[in-house]
Image 1: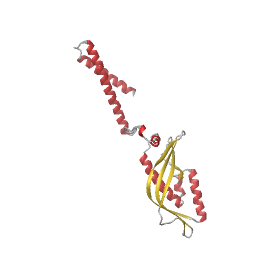
Image 2: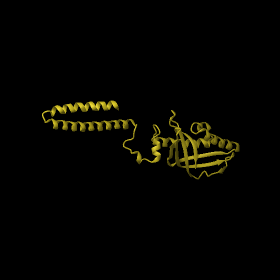
Image 3: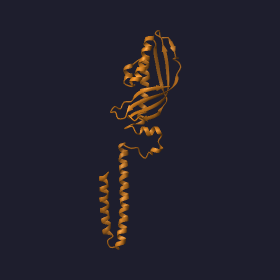
Image 4: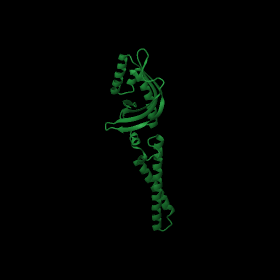
Length: 219
């Protein structure tokens, strides 16, 4: 930035010298006055152009958003802007995929898949329920139909650098429980449930890992 300013000053001096030569036949007072005003005007134009070019370069590189006033953003979006390389649309899409995989894996008792997607604390709760079902001979079946709504509900960053993003999901599912003989003991396989969930994903923004882990679920 300092180097750019030096270049601008040199340009102004050169232009000032040329103006002085061109206006040399006029009275001294008018010559100096006009030259200084012209130089100041040219400097302002160059400086504005330089700032404009710098901004355009940053926009093209994706380092800043084009002309988006921070005061017009919601509190949640202001928090999201503080997360390096965060893409809101991509996060929402990925969290929707994670939601479907997690509820399906939980229903099927697939602990290995859950280990890669949820925190250790939440994994313990899931595995306890899975083990209890096995001991009781209960079989869970989940048929995920699709989403009616999925959006970021809340976001915050702790002093430790831990980012927490809560997603609100409204989905259609068919959930039933069967006993060992295959008899339905809970739910209705012909009834589609409309379920609202708030799931919170976490990631430390200083971490080199891009992965977000599910840490809590609420109805």
